[in-house]
Length: 327
Length: 198
Image 1: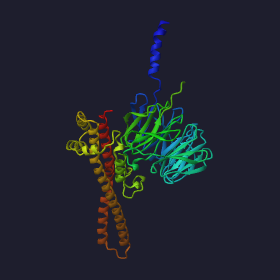
Image 2 (image 1 turned 30 degrees about the vertical axis):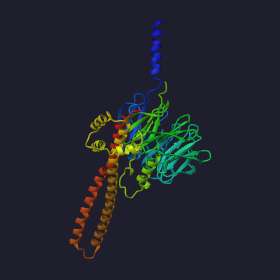
Image 3 (image 1 turned 180 degrees about the vertical axis):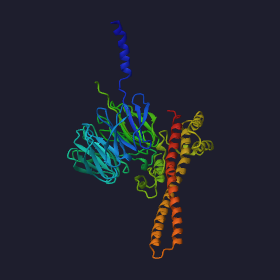
Image 4 (image 1 turned 90 degrees about the vertical axis):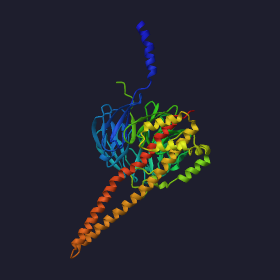
């Protein structure tokens, strides 16, 4: 009993000091041809691992067992063990894979092929190509609805968001947005779709039910030339209340109220910020800064940049591993 | 204040076309970012008229000129900024940042103009190489080929090709330079901003 009593405060203290789990953060370095792995708790670099030529898009399976990397110049997707960073196998991707999205059920993978105007659908278990869907010119952004029924692809030159049926692989709707759409992201309950337009400098808020644009978010950063404001990556918190938009060479991340879709703040991060990823508990948001070769860490609750961590050459994509399951 | 900013933005705004990757004057793989602005690297106070005046102060200008030099390693630049910050308030720090940008931005813009001319010369040279090839093919196909003339044309073609290839290789380095200058400005801004007081 006495032992228990002395142990308990220590356990409580320990529990309080480490409420969150440490997750691995994976950053693709487009020019370095490698992935930098960080620890989400200490925010220190664990290691850097070669992953093929010109790695850009990156994602991880919901069980945390497979890490997928678009090796753009190898014209395939490389699959790694996230723990050891050993390559497990590759997946056919079509030429120049840039970004992709994994179906919420963990299969299949929908890949944008920038050079040949296709979205390639690959079964991650059988490693077979299931379909090649013709879309607009220079497909890039990929999103998926929370219920997994609709996949979104944006085409940079055609300036459209294509709504694709995730099972029949047919395009069911097209929405014209502003110039050079780069990224598509649904909110938590699938009632809003955010599509960023890099050259247009806007984010279109689309009602997925009617496929109508309900609002265009514009950005005006004090002291920054309008041409430097180039929206790319978009992330929405799991309660839909906070939307973060990476504004490219303006080196800022816009913080948006997810209910009113009004911009609340512009956080200075690193140079040429493109992609972002939350930790599973949404304590932190990581941003990749391609020109300052670092990752900025945003504290989501206080909406402040708390740290910048040097990574490899030209960081592009980022994903955080899910919490380990207790088994 | 807002007016001043808008004015600066309007005056400095370059062709919006550039960033789209469709600019014929931009031979680089990097996205063209024609101009830098203070807000891209600075969350401190925006300079007012008095601060802009102070940015022309000889001591601040001299320090900005030293900091801009890329041969000055960043740790030494940080030490010089720290020494300056010992007696500098937020206004003087902001003036120093403005003075740094006033030096880096024109250099960078001039460089981008140079890259456009370089790119255009490469396009012209590529066209000349094509023309020489066509001329040679026509000469070789002639009923009585003039072999001396063909040899001369071939030598000229070899030279053009060699110049083109070498210039193309230097282009990789040349294209990196605007990014390097942007990185320098950003790193100096971070160092100066670290001394701002609330």
